Image (tube, rainbow, N blue to C red; front, side, top):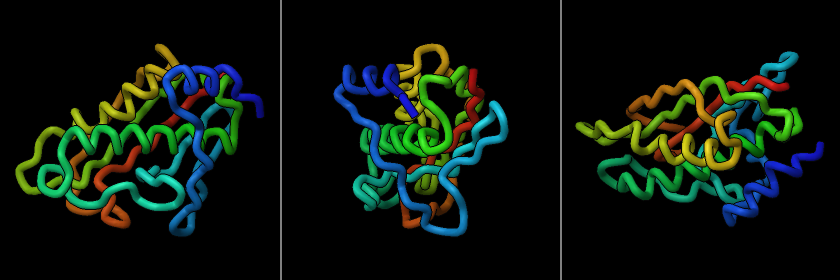
Length: 154
């Protein structure tokens, strides 16, 4: 699959498409049904390891979590690339971000902006999606954030 335009835009931003993360359980990174693609939740893994662990608002700052959400966003793009040409993305229609939140932490939206702003910077208006930012008690592998998307293709 080509992905030339998306890869070029990532390079302009000083980023590169990572290798898709190997699933940590019984699922696939992305599933396609015609022109719809659903990703599994993507963690902030780099080279197979979680970049930082812990609860946002306690062990992890909002700024760190924002950057981790950006890594999740790159991993989302890598998962999508397994099942479609990234240049065929018509729209990210839904982004869901889960934030491993310390008690009383309420800035989940600020954290998930890391992924949402990455998608907009890379895909333009096609990256602007309906979104949910959800605070949770725990995430797999004690990750601070997890992001998934639903995409329509051209």
